[in-house]
Amino acid sequence: MEPLDTDMEDTMREPRQATPGSRLNALLILPSLGILLILFFIAAAVFQFDISGLVDTIMGLMILFFIVLVGMLFWALAPRANRANKA
Image (cartoon, rainbow, N blue to C red; front, top):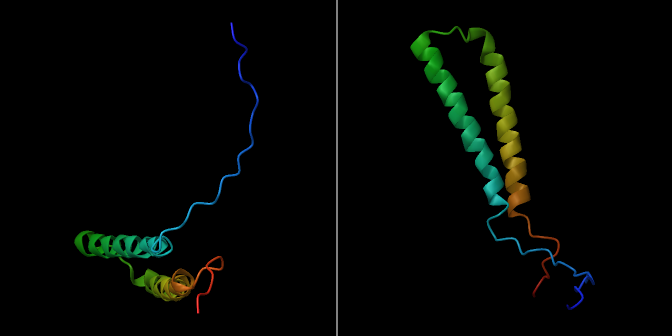
């Protein structure tokens, strides 16, 4: 019977290359939040919820979402640090 090969070889895993649109995929969270907000408005219209007290909060959230969108766009479209500049 042959002895088992129990020698473990440490292999270095290289980081996988990110696809060009992988950062842009993170932006898909914002339309889903927008869809939830629209569903909330539809539910308020159908079931006659009183949302007059929530108007300031909803407008604050929309302004916050806009600021987050601008920040995420700058992050998603920025050149990667590990990419070599070819001039």
